[in-house]
Length: 272
Image (cartoon, rainbow, N blue to C red):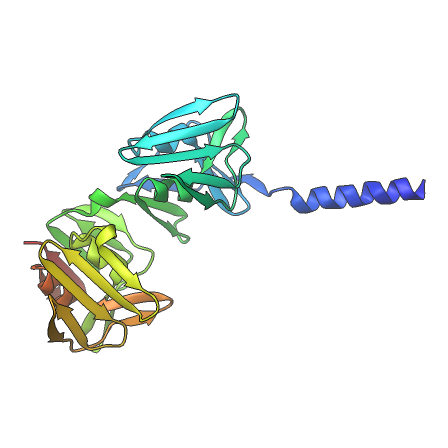
């Protein structure tokens, strides 16, 4: 009898240990290119990962999908991108490559729910989460295209041709120069993600657009533009784990102009 009780206790303990923590959170907003997405089924958080109804995320991203009820597998198609997930599996296939998942797709109240971050990234979206406002921000690569981009020092919001977008970090002033996160600057300058190459070993980044090749390195005051050296007043640096660069000369290298308004702490980038 004691042995049976001990076994039952162990089984119960294991169940409690491995049972995922599931909670609905109707306070979370999901924004896509500045517009709030609506879902007919409330998103849920499982083990601190947000899951949303598959149709609620695939359709706004312009993806079509098929659902196999026997294998419980969904396959989404968006241009050249193909994403496959199976309910309960901790892996997904993105363009033939297997990717590990923190949480699997699951069925809740008869609806297939998929992890938002991995799906968005697989379908070429940038994903940011603003904990203060409890907003998940999705932005498609093409959404960053524009002529006039406005950033404000200390603010995560920025505007492209009057439309509001969000970053996960904010610009800052140092020694009179505006430092911008690399990740966002090259995007608004029209450099594609495939033409932005980060070398972690030497802490350098190479950006390519048209006939321009720009290379710069963390801690170095020299920037190469098509092999010609340009001296920076201040070097790129890493802050809070993110790479930042004084923005003016990088913009100039790609033919963009910048203007600074000290009163509003605003820098405007104009793509020419």
